[in-house]
Length: 192
Length: 434
Image 1 (tube, chains in turn purple, brown):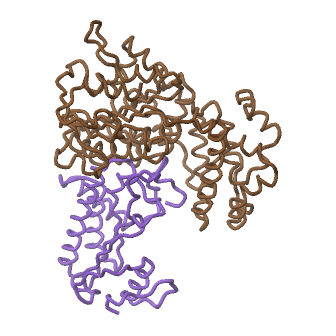
Image 2 (image 1 turned 120 degrees about the vertical axis):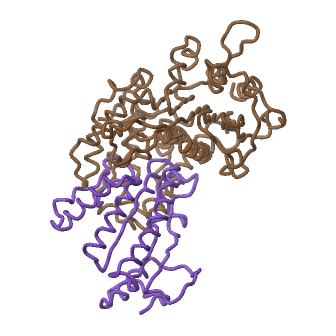
Image 3 (image 1 turned 60 degrees about the horizontal axis):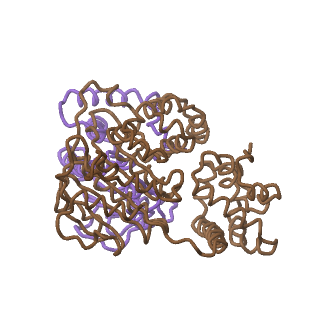
């Protein structure tokens, strides 16, 4: 995404397929083929979920980052499609957790974090409201995060602001990495 | 090359006397670009540059230093002179460097303060004689888009009030919006003129003072086809997403097929700026350089203008407010198709070309989009002083036989409690804008 103007013209997903490991590529192609023939609902996020599940089942990586982007229709001004993307992401996050619970490689030893990339610009802003996230405003910066699974001490709602920079050292600690240089600090609500 | 022959005499004199040398570095990209694109500017934009430069030209050195002191100091702190910073045009690289600076917001406020000072000076020279002219924003969500009466106006947060409309006068051949715009043109004592004629008959009706923007095609088709209505819109900006279809498709094709070096987005934009789009535009756009370039810039600035008709309407109206400050803006929303499987909105594919499935209208989704974007049009107007105290906004929801009205107390329909006929509404709007 470096240098791309994804809110304007010329945005596209850069072609990284040539750099993929052959096994990963075969797995993705199999996932796409299965997905296309499944007859299920079709959107970019559905495809992402389908491929994520394939990767989990075939490779069981310790770290998995899943970026859902149906909500990005907001950049093109369809509020209905943006809302639809939110509902899809909500459902797929739940389905992903169901996969974690059903997969013996993950069950009982997985922590899942769900967080929006940004908020949106305020209605009436010169940056065109929900279309974008450029405003120097709390509505773009203040968002939420949900954490569940093995790394969480106890169910609770944390009302105090959590800094974005605290997430990385917390996750590094969960994975048993050596302490990393960071402006942030580990969150006490996670298991050490 | 500066096209000096088109500048007003006073401005040309100021330029010849070196007024540009007195501007801070960060003013130069904007001012130079505006001067180079003079023939593509709307009157409001020309006036803004002219006011600034004439104001600066009349200051002595001490006053000029005082005017720009904050900007110059912020430029020093930002280290602008060490940047790769174009002084001839506004570039993405310029914008990125400015936006990344921790002083960006402070710099923006300082720049605005300079323009405000120039505006105050211009008003002072006119003896503070500028009375706010009446303006009208007329929005239409057509009957095919079903709104929920319980939630239709929730987003407006009590800025105005809903009024019930009697739309029975709308005929099969003319929509309520058409009737309001062009009136009942048949001869006879029951005929009446429309809002378009009323605004055109204003003594100081300027170029680009009326904008009609639609997501579809029928409204502007009808306006340019009728003899009387064509005369009424002869000085108006007419933008139809549907009539611009060829232009939009070809621009999308250029965007999709050009070699993209993502490290140099300015080069991509330069290429798109050089494409001659005139042959792809309908006559009402091709004939007017400022409008033609407005369309190109609109497409280049994203915000869905090449993707969805309703986004085009909202963004075009917002940019019209920002750039032209028109007295009358008419915006009609429409229906888009449901997204097809395996087609992405982000990559400018034409879904009908890449997916053989038939397009299916999304009436409910389009209604949600239009409901939000109609509000956004009004909020966009409200960002500018010209629209804050003397503007009537009417948003018609045909499916509900309702309109949402935001208006100053002196607008005559404010006191209505019975269903308002189109004739009554039309009279009130004509009286307001005429």
